[in-house]
Length: 142
Image (cartoon, rainbow, N blue to C red; front, side, top):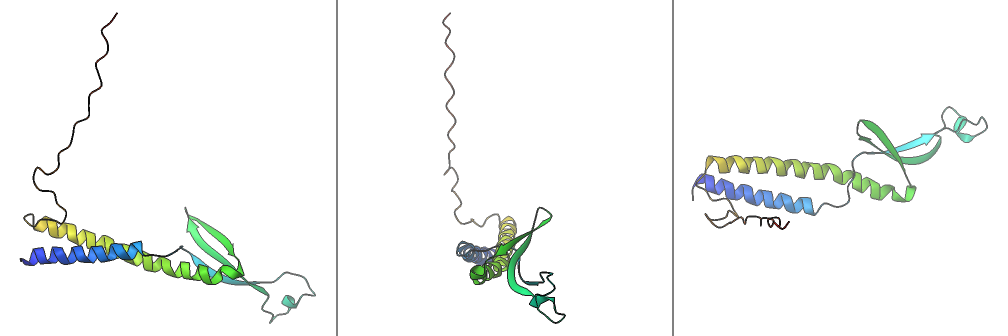
């Protein structure tokens, strides 16, 4: 086996493994999960002191959509699940980036070795395209 064919096979195997990883991705979402403490502004409240932490924590998910920052309040019972979803997103993006790079390398390798048969390639004459049926001619009745 030539080095180019061997490289193509390795790249195909890598691409297949990356596709499996993409398909196995769990729930994911972009953004940042932020813990916030707020002061209410009431003079007699415990949050009014200088060293007071404030009310909270309250959780929000912030991300950019079409150039605008979108913020969603996350309920306390959904914080762990949301954190896992936010953590999954960069891993997913990394796998997709690797998939694109591997596919690009595979395309280049196939261009460099036109005699190497790509996996799943049809044999010559193996694919025939059927023509569309023509619409019937219009009636010539008067």
